[in-house]
Image 1 (tube, rainbow, N blue to C red):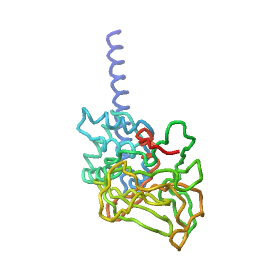
Image 2: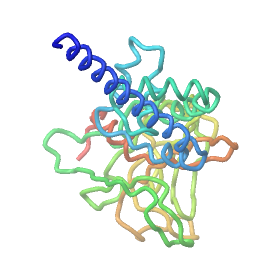
Image 3: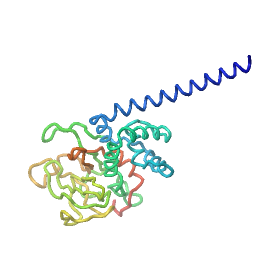
Length: 279
């Protein structure tokens, strides 16, 4: 009797484990089916919600895995999972059913993350009271020039005085755009080696006479934080508080350029700040 009972318990345990595994597998199947709808998947990737510490975890996972940090990044963003076992199961399904799509997404993620080196506002000298702050304001409503979504993150200055805060390049790259825009004021746009377009707007002035096509290095001084823009006339200032608008753009699957939320990138770069003698 006891032997039969033990066998029954073992069978029941095995069935429960199988059911749990099957349930998890079916959930992943559902996620693959639902989240790889083009619009929903790209919406999640554009938000780039990667909480502090997760990117480092994804980098660690790739050491002994067939998957890259970008695979794990994609899996984490699309599935909401962060554990390696759950992500491995999810990525296995992605590669089984959508290998081309995940490779396209990997190129997209590399354009955002691969070339990042420094936070765009260096730390001031020791003892300085100058500081910065920012929030997740991507796609907040904006009305100047027509109703639109805010395609970036604003890094605000604690001292509302133009020309005080240096702005450095977050990446290596090539100057693609330079000069005045009605919305962005004095801006500079840099294309990084893996294809991301990093946009710095509302500058007070430039560090030097940059030319389109010129190479820049990560950490190189681009200019100084200001409040230029929101005017037809070049040199318009005073329409808002001093800040740096950071935008990140990548090429979508159809060849169009799309904005990506810089907030999570900036949170990760907080630990990678240069120190300049200012303030």
